[in-house]
Image (cartoon, rainbow, N blue to C red; front, side, top):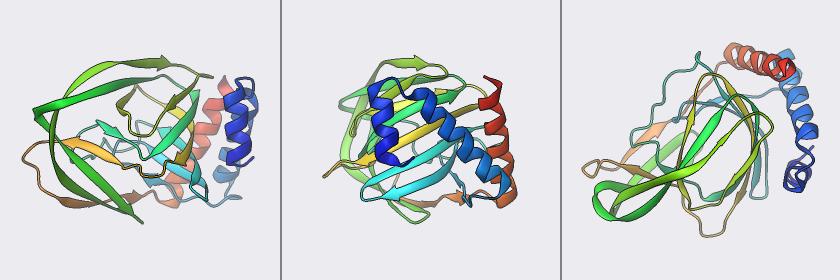
Length: 211
């Protein structure tokens, strides 16, 4: 299945099992080496397996594991996307906290410009304070959405696996909140080695089969 079919099935609300089956088969192919996939270690602490990129849309499998290094964000876990997210939780537990921003001295807004494996973080003139609110708690089989521009942070305990569908929003920006005194800088996302990618894909496939 490609982005359009996956999105339609999740939006209909009755296709989660079919999407989960597709994810399990895809993970099995990666684990066997039949489907090459180079994992990216995301600064927020999960492994991203890019499956499809096409015309402003994308499909990824996200894996959280104690084997992965801790989050390496230089700003904070508060961020918003330039794209609309639709996600299915395949295994584990996940919760989102939403953030309403008001002008204040606590945190600075950074624009994140990504190219290849490099993230350039540019400080803006705006500083804010965040008022958090509950964005929901999710378990296996739950589908959730986050629109572009919504500040949030995600908490995961232990192992988790999701399907993440993204659709670019024209005029959107990737933003992060960081210390007010932090200057502009660049970070490089690390690639997961082939052995680790295969090992984590195999483990994720096993978790999906366990039910």
